[in-house]
Length: 140
Length: 164
Image 1 (cartoon, one colour):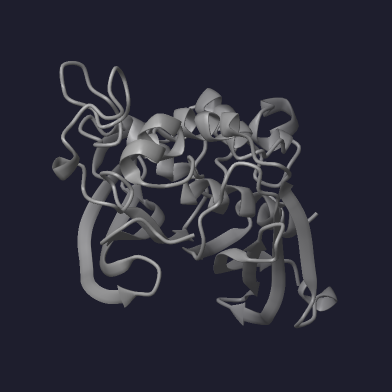
Image 2 (cartoon, chains in turn yellow, green):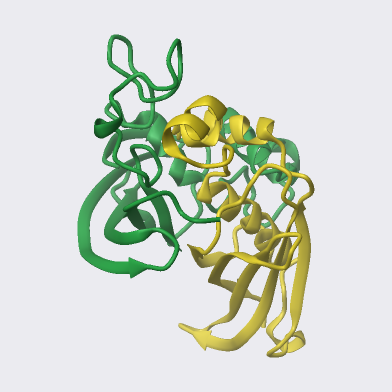
């Protein structure tokens, strides 16, 4: 279900809610799978009493991973050639995130077709938590 | 993180995909994956971050007999001045992450990761005081020495916890 360059136009968008009411348990799952056991993400006692935050918060890489799900659903499996983000705000338990890709350019490279995307993920208040870009191979 | 041997395994991909809420069957079911364009299970886009599991010295994993900064009997297992200040309590915060995919890793690959330090810079932040940024570039190569993923990471140590 790959995208096709001839069907795409600059400004096209694809949007998905990637998490609703983020659970602390999902932060534990991500810690276990990724190997990043920083207690700021899973240890309410440490993070409130020592690190000085109001609660545990999501790994930036979890926000990037959830945003990546929207991207691969849009461009198809194995099609990404580039994906990069800045983490602009922390993500907290209870947040609901919506990730969006916007077509920035459709171009040819080494005989193939590439789509360049702007990537943005916002929380339930419309505040951007992830800001980035991606590129993917598309069909002609 | 430098890693000598990062074996990519289907069960690890399954767990990782679940943890980011991605239930695409290409990460879970080899028979289904054979019907897709890649033709096998592949890793989701941010999977190489899990190479931390194969870094014996990874500092964000508790180790037997070593102090750990998370809570146990006390709110932290080490003295506050050693914990890296207000930033993220030891590791600082992750500011940026960039990936370039030469191909997507799949079960059976055995990757190595080599790390090159990049630029360092300072900035005055509105919500967290002075910010110290540092960049690293990690090259993931496969069992044939071919480049699979190039990752560039930017970390930041903040002077105090980020204002909310």
